[in-house]
Image (tube, rainbow, N blue to C red):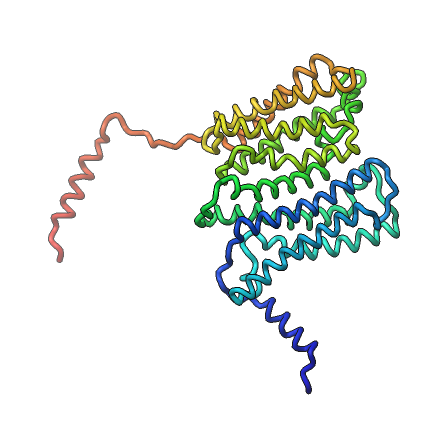
Amino acid sequence: MAITPLDRLLEYKMHLLTDSRQPRAYATWWQDLTTAAFSAWFFGGLILDVNAHARGWAESFFTWWHLAFYTGFFATAAWIAWMFLRAHRADGRTGMAAVPHGYGPAVVGVPLFLVSGIADMIWHEVLGVETSLAILFSPSHLTLAAGGVLIVAAPLLSAWRRAALNAEPEPIPLEARMAAPALSLGYITTALVLFLAYLVPHTNPPAAVAAALQGPNVFEGFPVAGIVFTTVLVLALAVLMTGRFRLPLGFFTVAFAYPAVMAGAYTGFEYGGYVWIFLLSGAWLDFLIWLVRPELRRRRDLLVLAGAWAVPIWAAFLISTGAATGVWPAAEIGLGAPVVAAVVGGLFMLVVQPERRDYVPPVPVEPSPFDDVIARAKAMTANKPAE
């Protein structure tokens, strides 16, 4: 039976999927940075899409903002595929051996996102376009988010694997080496801000926040719950990153840029003050980390970080809300909410680094009367000639 070109193509594809069992390589800093740059296009399209939903623009699957979103995905996926192809051509790597450290989840994320995008198109055309809170729980949207996060997380996971395996860092300045992980962390946080928007107070209009914080008669819990949740989220990111990397000044300012814009896009940029406060929270976190130098083994530094970050940031948030609306929160809430956030943040830090006391066995004050008997027995046994 003659071998057709299709047979040869299928055989070659199977060869590419077979692991050559070579040690996996590390992506270079500029490859990770290029992945992060394409991901900026990818998630920039997502921000445009969210803004369009918030403004109530005519919505269907075939829109300009969807075009930006999906072309960003294809550009990012094509770049990652080129990295694999380059490893194959340079070193003959096939299968997972061609996948750099940290890019394994992207291998799953690309097909997952592609299938979810097709499912989302069918969902929109058959069942219509979701509105309000339903957008965040649509099955196709959730799988799109999972696939997208697996893709854009590649630069951060690449740096994480390099640090975990004690690989020699590239001989470049720390700021250049950590730029791609900072952007990658920002994209992951952007997805969290979007799909947990009901727990992030920056995604609400100031009027809604102000009305909820007026006092007992109209009080709603969502702003305070959001303040506490966001505090724990930010502190968790700080502990996670400082526990693994030496961070340059400005790391979290860069990481919080896209999430801040996403928070504004969620309300159609109705109020820009919250965007700036979100970005300021990253810059303030950078300053505190530089000043306090929190480490996982120093509970005192973690507690100071929790209080010093939460109180001024949420005080600024509440002041901004009152200034924008002319409606100020009840004094008890305005003064107590930042403090409660700091306390909960401190409790979270204690969970991260609980009290540890090394057990020291007690030393007897007086020697035991059996000590002399045991010592004599050991001496007699040691001096006994072997038979």
